[in-house]
Image (cartoon, protein in one colour):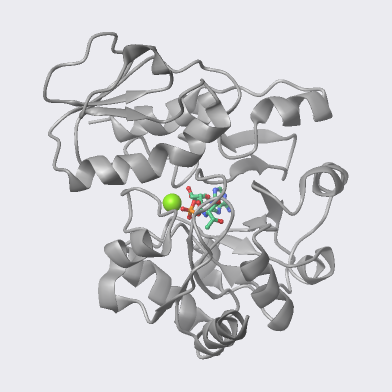
Length: 309
Ligand code: TXA
Ligand code: MG
């Protein structure tokens, strides 16, 4: 308990000093910094090697703090009450007098916001009087981190501090909805899109060509830097084979995302296993067919992008 509190204090003091801190969330670890500070935000882009045209998600503790910066609408309030805090990001219109650094949105008039559920980031957000911009804590286009060690593997000593909050429970980035007009799906993610559709009584399009119109939804992403082939029934001898069921038995090159087709579990394990495969220096990843439903949609989306050339 003593350590836990002093680690939170340490994180807060770096954040107040306009430094970046690796922070756990329930989706993936974020590279967090003061969203009201130009200096702090510039450090995020530099560390991540991210183009400044690709805007950041800002994390809030409460609705009250969000009201200072964004215009709130009915759909947002409905979804907020049902799903927040949790793995859902909203794109809202910025207020003219918002305090958000222009660098967060590249001067744009909308802002991506989220209320994370992980207790450690919530404790920090409650203590500080600014929201936290936090993209996933990986170098641009590589795999998102789900442990403190993953963040360290990405940035090494270039990052001042990483707060350990255990392995991320969801393991995939948040689902993103644009609510500036009629609700639009921007990114499949950790909140099952079918639950949102049922709740709003609507149907989203899952085709990537739609979300490709948004910055950051590029085709190549989440890449382990190894070719990936999908829907493979018979793997090659020397490839890493990703599976979701036990029927294919044991083999040194078999990596089970889940052993009983539990897609939530598969989502949680995906990035962790991709990192293991990378460390073992496999030259090819082959993937068993994964059902394109619920969290399976998000898993297939990430695998497709990781396999894009
Ligand atoms: O789960 C998550 O969302 C994690 C954790 C740390 O919260 N964060 C995350 O951030 O995945 P990032 O930067 O890796 O992905 C955010 C995506 C980017 O593709 C970015 O282009 C998009 O959100 N985005 C941010 N602001 C936007 C805006 N105003 N309009 C459209 N897309 C936006
Ligand atoms: Mg990212």
